[in-house]
Image (cartoon, each protein chain N blue to C red):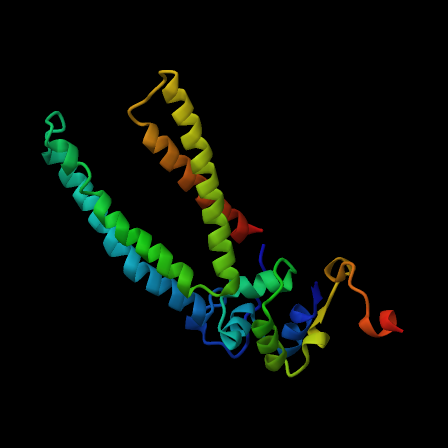
Amino acid sequence: MEESTEHPGELASRGPRLSAEDKRQRNSYLREFIPAIVTFWILLAIVSNTVDQTTAGARLWVLVPVLPMIGVAVALYRATQRADEYGRIVMLESMALGFGVSMIVAMAVGFLGTIGVAWTFSGWIVFGAGMTTWGLALLGRNLT
Amino acid sequence: MENRLKELRAVNGWSQAHLADLLGVSRQTVNALEKGRYDPSLPLAFRLARVFSTTIEDLFTPDEDDLGETTNSITSSG
């Protein structure tokens, strides 16, 4: 449990847990992240429900939800740039760990593919492994 | 690296968030500094010294591991 002693002179509304820098960084990140992720979910719903995925033309349309993820990536990059020195280390270390696990899983999936073991969802295995590792690494640094 | 941040913060009656505000960093950073999980950069160490009106040497004490094989240049040259 992290200690945070409330300063007697602090305004109650400011709260004991977050500094002004915490709030500035969080608000800036959410301002950029939320529109991108909402757009992603909307496009995903539209593509999932309207595009006939059995046709050849659908191959390009299923990529449409990926576009707003560029905005998510930009939001994450800018959050890294805004973070203070310790925050930047935590973010970059956890990203590096997620990247490493993604590469290992991608390699394993690739080798399996060479012997004929191939899944249509193998890309999601790589994505899930990387994102889960990244999230757990971030969580671990925040809880310890 | 051992430090006196928690002790001096308590003396001043500040919360971690208040100290973070004074330093312009996140509360998580202050927490990591106090627990010795993170050694600050030189600019942040100077900011800490200024906030507590003291010196970096008064705030931080290096462990033997931090010093490694370093020798004192004055005693080793004599």
